[in-house]
Length: 108
Length: 120
Image (cartoon, rainbow over all chains, first blue to last red):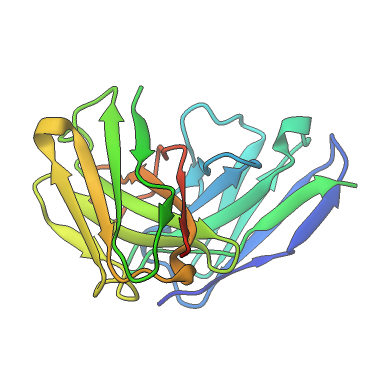
């Protein structure tokens, strides 16, 4: 089973700042099979990024994903108030699919 | 626009079977090929449970495989989940997901989720 470790656990920032979230896999991910999701309180997760860097339909271009192998990054440029949420990475290239434990982006 | 809606009992007794249904609207069950279930609890975080191909092939998380059955009801445009011998550790929000057109794919969209509590 591939373990995904996200850091930091919490990121305290202000609107307009840049958020940099990390996801490290315990094994190399085939075909960069990594996705990022955003979850707001009381809501289901929403797909942001697939294939490590592909932006999902309707996702603003301030969200970008990068990385390969075992190290991946989600960057949110110019944080908007609606971006304060919990973010999860997930690998889907083998079974079992697993998720990271999440990074909470909250107001400084 | 594809939408998924979970339904089922909110309370299940320990040792009994948890049964959930996911109704698919805005698209046919054979238009996205793969469907699945994910659950979320404070103690275990997000956990993938199983995927199913609209034709019936199934893929289970090894940690749950002995207790889980996922199935497709094409005529109803829905999928179902059955989890046997539940314990308090199975208390979670259960999400239905669309898993796209290949065996290994991201999840999009998700249903709103349904909370299932295991308690006597």
